[in-house]
Length: 457
Image 1 (cartoon, helix red, strand yellow):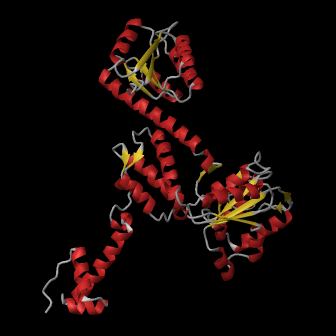
Image 2 (tube, helix red, strand yellow; image 1 turned 45 degrees about the vertical axis):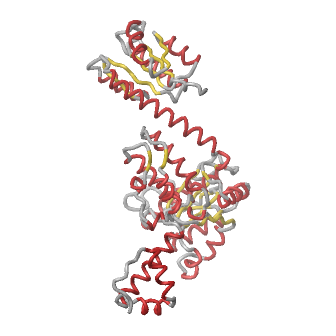
Image 3 (cartoon, one colour; image 1 turned 60 degrees about the vertical axis):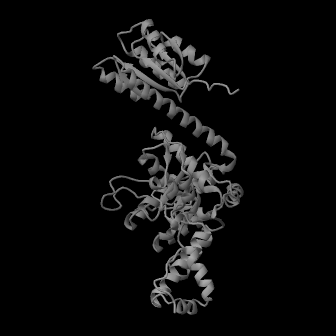
């Protein structure tokens, strides 16, 4: 005999005993309701047994006409049980109290007298969001063995990356990370930093392609006051700011040649000079560079200095494309789904079978970044409890969901129909052009359901 599922546990905190009794009676069919009449009682109940949701009246003794005790209870509940969804009850016209409660961290608020059908909906949603957050935390713990410093991956491709990070992190030499856009190069660099002896120092990242060329030198090396028009104060550059830690130079393939020379000098001497400065500044920094460009082509074209490349590429990490990470797409997709469902308080918890097929068959030109953005957008836009193909804005047609047999049949149909048009439907001519026998052609036409325009003489 199956056990009856436990009801979700709800704590009602109100100083009025009659209201507590009425609320408990109204909600007991759906929830395991306990009550408390003041702040100490509420905290004691939560210590005895955590609750996902608390219904809290702000007017609590010893000053029930003053919201301070209720707001204090709210703050203490959230400190002791951070995941608790607290729904605040406040008097009519007390908008300031409601706003203060939300600012403190309340999940929602309702005004007196409470509309019970509306409360039922708010409670249902609060419990659902709490469950999603709990599942997301469980998923993070479950996938901890599959991940590494925030990077998820249970396939051999990413396990090799994790192993390489462990090795290069123990050294203090430059690292060059190669990989397509969206493969997680900055996360990889951060993982190296966190695993290194410099983990207590700063991690400073700069995208060399995102900053205009005329500002890039100042961003990297800093400037002295008055060194150029607009330089109203001394400013440290990113290299100097990373002193004692790690500097991550993303899209270094876009670094202008003049700055490549200056960067090379810094790597050789571990000294910089700010723009307008004359005094060398010692800087102790580990440099990690990355690019999604074909660096070999850049070397051949002369747009990237060979001496700088070999200075940076003492150790090289190659990040795989998402389509080459077998089994990782749904691991990542489910992680993003639970993360954003909890963040946006959406009642969505799974992908449809069709959307799973679409996710797994898509080529992901934007890699993990594209996957995360599509799932995030889908969570926001969906109106149901499942993510469908249309929510992901992935093709649901045969191009994305086609099996090998379906793809083969589609190709055969296209070739045969084109030949029949050229040969005006004459089967003999089509068979000759396609180099198959007439009986074989008849069989294929029957299988594909292609009607002949006319009988072949």
